[in-house]
Every structure is written in C-alpha cells, then in structure tokens.
Length: 287
View 1 (cartoon, helix red, strand yellow):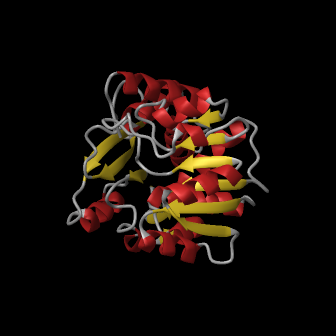
View 2 (cartoon, helix red, strand yellow; view 1 turned 90 degrees about the horizontal axis):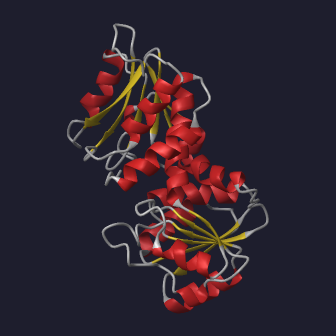
View 3 (cartoon, rainbow, N blue to C red; view 1 turned 45 degrees about the vertical axis):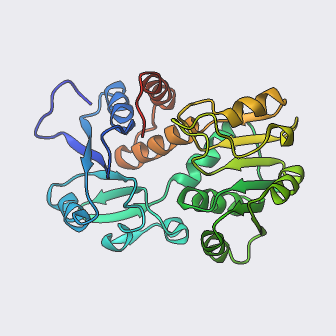
C-alpha cells in the first residue's frame, strides 16, 4: 500500500458479517507498504441477502480479490465461475481471485494449517492425528492431513457434522469417534499430533480447554486453531507437560500470506504479517 490511493490502486478486501474487527486489513496493508505495492485492502460488511450482489460487484468494480469469512464460505461457492479442486472437495471457499472477470474460489485453510508444521520441521506422513471438531475449519484441516498421508481420528459431539466430514473423506484412513471422556482418552493416547479445531478456549472463554491436562504428554504435538488468546490454556498446559505446541496465530497469518501471493504474485512478508497480527491482538483486535 502506497501513501496515496491512485486511479491505478488495486483493491482487495474481505467480505463477511461482521468484519469490523478483522485483522486482515492491517496485515495486508502492512505487507503492501513493505513491498511498495499500489494495492489497498478494505473490509466489506456483506449480509447473507446481499452476497450475490456483492460478488457481481467484484467484477463490476474490478476488485482483484477477496477473503471470505463467516457466514459466506459455503454460500459463495455457486456464485463463482470456477472452483479450485481442493475447495470443491472441502466444500468451502475463503479466498477469491479475479482474473479479468473470471472469479475462482480457493480454500487456503488446508495449506495454512500445514505451513506452521513444516516451519517446525514436523512431518505428518505416517503419523496418527487426533482432531477435535468437524466443522468448516476442521474439514479443511482433515483434507490437508489425509492428503499428506496422516492417519486421522476425528472426535465430535455432532453426529451430522461427523458423518458429513467422513463422507467427504471416503476412502481415506479416518476413524470417527463421539467426543466423550473415554474416546478422548483413547484417541489422545494413541496420537502423535493433537489438533483442537473448535473454538473452545477462545476469548472471552479463555479458561476453557477441550482436553484435560492429564492426557497431555511429552513427544505429543499439540495444535490449536484458536488464536485469541495467542497462547490458549490448551497450549500452556501442553507446554507444561513437555509437548511441542503450535498456536492458531500461525494459521491465521499463513491464510493471509497465501491470499496475498495469489493476488499480487509476490512472496508475502510473513514475519511482518505475523508481528502485525501479534501487535493487534495485544491491543484487543479479533477476527
């Protein structure tokens, strides 16, 4: 982002309801300034009823790309011209790219989950992963894991969500369990990696945790998609038990970075985007 908006400034943004507290605009605009790109990123509050008109406007206004957040990740799919195959499998879109009026939907949740693992030198192939949750983010993570060769145990209280996820993963090495104390103990006890793909532990309920500390141990990798607070109770107790931990802020930053790269063709300044997000969380921002 340059100091001045011009007639050539390329517009990107985020649609959702609400979007007022999204950290995406500060992260992206900081990255644009760093690379001296004539881009600007803005939030657009779009209601469910207005979604079709908003997608039409992307073409009319020559908006380069959008991030898509709640509640539009599924509803936006039939409004696009093309779907990346992975987004189609997952059944949700969180990034739109406008190439000369052709809108393509992507899902970067899967890749953004794997990136922090790779940064930490962690290989998921052949590992057993216990994942709590079967919602939208969990679906993307599940695809990322099974396509990378992991064995997956999914625990969830909703039979419908669990059945839908397992149906999408038909043929993969996936085991479904009802989320209760007995199954959780069994799954965590056999897992190499534990993933919390729910909102349990998110501010303002930061004292909550999906897993009792007694189940955590050394040589377990614990990942939490919750990023506010950056260090959840689950991560703090896992670290105290000697486990390696990966927080949700890393996934949030890589989601932004991957979208940035699709829109601009430049490598994202990931460290700057991470420091921007960290600073914003300290001052009370949330996504």
